[in-house]
Image (cartoon, rainbow, N blue to C red):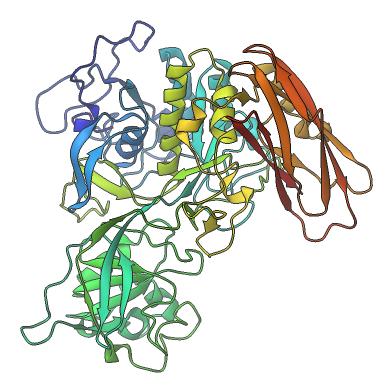
Length: 620
């Protein structure tokens, strides 16, 4: 964490709550100065855990050996979850307003477990487990874990540090929210899939940062960026020549390396004074492409999406004027549309094109939104496909939040700029949005279990975008529960969900004991979503129990059966005489004819006229 950031000011906060057992531990060193203690009544604790990393790799330099954030990831995510109101937030003049976290008046604590110098990696299981141990003992209410392994693996429920740590957190009545991973759009890529974890996918919000790209042939396209734009090329000519990186490569450099503007591939004699087009080489960041363009003398860089990024345009903080453009490139006939293929840019020389980049502007009320990010990891879960993962989706694209003052906004070592706020992408950014909401629910309903809070957020989510149509993905296809889980968060509805699907530690232990043996138990875990294998010729019976957390009333069921599946719910209405009352119902799934194209998706909703309690149904 960057403790001096205005998001962590403690003005107006009373004494640290007596339930906090952190004993004033604040393992943050001075960065430039003589101050000794950096925690306060807002940031009430900071610890670091590096023994596993140091045993595995190397000793952490003494200057870095602190819970202080030298990368920006921790400050960004912590302020998204619980940062206080910080007026005047903006990035290069974009997105001006007051920044605040999901639980803006919460007390926050930082537990540092990742030690890479230039990115958020270098997190080891034993360090993660030790951090969980301390957070549980310190008395936190919510743990936000924006980290995880890249590849899911079968044994992870039993051996993964986050899975084990989060089980102990939930057993101590602490809700654990984590990121789904950034390995999309591949199916089976979702991580952090334990049923006791709350797994968050990433989607867009209704705000974009866009620049106009004007072409010499009088056409215009939009590019995402945060830049201040170009000056005209000369008094008589506004436009600059454009060159594709494959046409700007040095002799003996492979087309593939040049395509991604890898270091040492570009010929400055060809690039100097021009706008360079590179292909996106990383799902979350393309600042290194921008840096290589800058070193070769480009005036600006356009980063063209690869096939895995779809239409999603990421606004990034490049070291020179830059924009992300769609996989269609500049849309000029015969130019660049086959940039992702095997050849060069194409037959027509890219220098025949002239272009100009205007300064970025902030657009709000963008439609459609949300859209599921191409990078967001997808289900089904490799570990246990009968537990639907991810659970939910939240904003994880072009998110503005607090940032470290020890690194430039591009995280490149050569970037000497320092910004109080930065734009970042990833399921790491989506996770703390949900952590913040979980904190609000915990304040409002202090006796609710982690499972009840999770259920409230899931069953009130929406699968429609702001045009009232089904949420789409970055490839313009209708998204599915494997991309968004129960849907997109709706915090105001989650405060009063009507009914919840509750679970206890015993339920999770039974689930673990059944692993690999009793398939029926997975589908009957009292989860807010329902996943089953195709019933075949025999009807399948799934049981769920709901707890009334609202006033007395009668709920009636409404089902949207997956295609070719008849869904019968018994009983079809539930009457609750008091708050806290539980009722059990059965969902009978029967196949009508031969299955055509699995998986199949449907839903089940209980409503009393005011509340709507919805669960996705997945047939594998």
